[in-house]
Amino acid sequence: TVELTGSEGKRMENKAGDIESKDDPKTPAAPKASSNKKKKIQAVSCTRESISLLMNNLAQFGGILLYSWFCENRPIFAHATKSYSRDIFWFITLIYIGFSFTTLKPNPKDTSLLNREQTEEWKGWMQFLFLMYHYFHASEVYNSIRVFISCYVWMTGFGNFSFFY
Image (tube, rainbow, N blue to C red; front, side, top):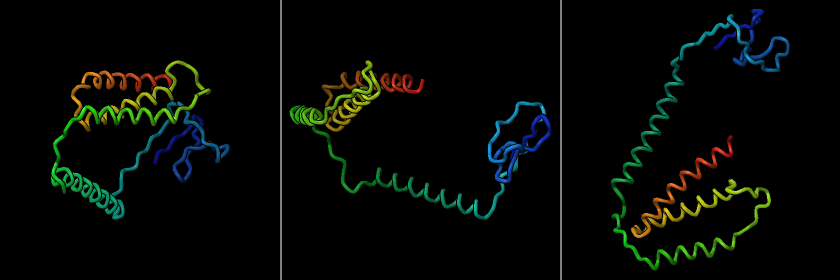
């Protein structure tokens, strides 16, 4: 429990622990910056319920880790070797490009250069190419993929900066 007192010494805490004004109990008040602040922190109590909940969560987490290890190290099917076919790689890419043209729509809301929807679309295209590169082990597009990864990281930073700033 945290107890704060204002400059007049009025207690500003309700039974739920929420800080509120003494004048209006329903309106939370901002804590006042004064030298009369008292902070009282209560120690964590180890009850039977909290220990049981902790053990339950640790058992679930351990089960998930064991399942992940089992799936990774004891696969049902043996790992296959990757075989690269340039024709299949580019055919699937062209099918994807052709299908994506059927979903084109204008964006009249934001016509600025590098708007959020546009950069998210480009990042989606790059993710598709990353997956294709790793699935087919297409070493001939390695340099392009490195450039795409750099662009992806830059566009993520640019998008976050322009969206949140």
